[in-house]
Image 1 (tube, helix red, strand yellow):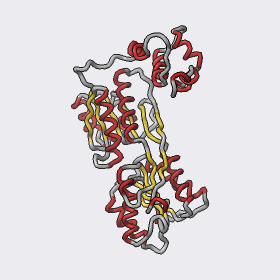
Image 2: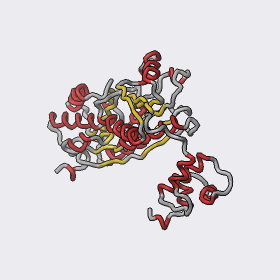
Image 3: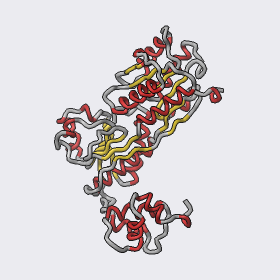
Image 4: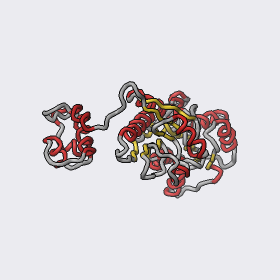
Length: 348
């Protein structure tokens, strides 16, 4: 935004405060809580607003909690269900970049935190002397119902909506409804859904979106078209899709919870001599590299993976450095990317 056009109303909207509050901060008059003052000054800085007094960065440094000295590092754990999954890998790249920028260390643990026994969780936390946790899973009962973990936690991509712990992710339900509406907009109505493990909130929300959208349009849901996989693996998915495509009541569209599963459907379609998107349309989720390398390219829901990880790390470090910092629940935007698997113009 052009700095000459920035107004205090712009700052008020960005900081989610009143114009009067912005005025008090800029003029240094009246009482304003430190955390509110920080929000206003941060918004002013990001909008390149010149307040005409001390540099905003200097004012912020006087208010923000003191961070560790450069010769000491804050350490935290990152629990991920998979280190080979492209989605998690991209989010972890963001976490690590933010950690480096903030002179912190992160240790990636390839385990689902929700499935860890309490004694293992305690050993990992207190044995490594870390100051916080980022997890890609729902929280175990030992965390939700007890005080087994007394360090800051940020949930990334998954959330229990617990008021004690910050979270960042997307609106999986709305994004999935958008994907389903696009599929039905192509004229295909026999839509199959390939889902992953049922113990994740995002798999439940994406499935609910599939069911609700089919019902909204008065379309039948064949139970055989709803495929629940124990893991997001392609080998089992491939054989299942082959059987489905060769059945008498075969679907003519697939919505999958990942791009790797969408690529598996495309491979199975080629094996059964089906043309994509004329005979079969396919929509994936995540916008990882395979969605752009596959032929045809995959229509998918893009979510800001790197930014999500970067923000998750910043949220955690803020809570570590300032235990009084407010808990945040952030939903990031998504985008439907239309490509060759649903639109013939892109198939060449």
